[in-house]
Length: 267
Ligand SMILES: C[S@@+](CC[C@H](N)C(=O)[O-])C[C@H]1O[C@@H](n2cnc3c(N)ncnc32)[C@H](O)[C@@H]1O
Image 1 (cartoon, protein in one colour):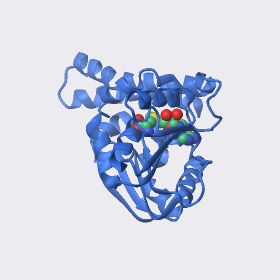
Image 2 (cartoon, rainbow, N blue to C red):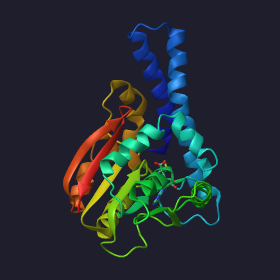
Image 3 (cartoon, rainbow, N blue to C red):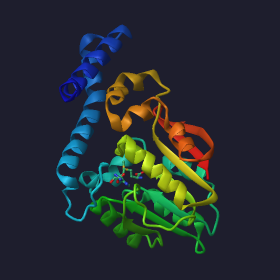
Image 4 (cartoon, rainbow, N blue to C red):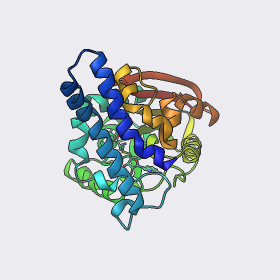
């Protein structure tokens, strides 16, 4: 299986070239565009793979069979807007969360805490927002940014599959671009942990890789169908995962860039 996976980038480029030629591009233009489209994905996948095998590069990073992202921590805040996940994306996510002053919010897999700090602004003085992540370098950057921006958001090292919080504590749980970092069994465990820590009636807002709605993304992302971390998501099954954990009112409420889906559910 691993040998087939290594063929995927080459097949992706060949397939993209073929599609682009059929769309009327010259062969050189098609090769150039295909490389531009596919190479960043390959580089990111390579970095993540190295990160996993080197235990996240940081001795304090918590053990998880998910993928902690220490390796991107130093550049993550510049990387996100560069790939289209800037302020507008964060505001759209928070829009679905419908946060009110006084809400208690958890951001699972918070990374450098951009969304966590915006959530903190939304809940005001009376509220409380916590971001968790196993990657020590991500949490380090999140704490530093919180200090610089005088945010009251709290950040802790923790994993979604074993949340260090009591039952029924949060009004809302946010998960942004994190689920594709988990193998299938941790996704099941993680969603049930989110259900446990939410108050009855609490909201779960999840945005992640989803069934592409734009053909071009199928051309680029089809290899993800062969990777257990993303297969179920590319097939559009995030909603099934939430329903199985006991959530109600599960709904796909929006999409972003043709391959990210916003899901919302209630406990
Ligand atoms: C792509 S980043 C998303 C960060 C942030 N939520 C955002 O929207 O920018 C995914 C994050 O999930 C974290 N992660 C990986 N495995 C995890 C786990 N088992 N539990 C919680 N977070 C995890 C990674 O360390 C990384 O910071």
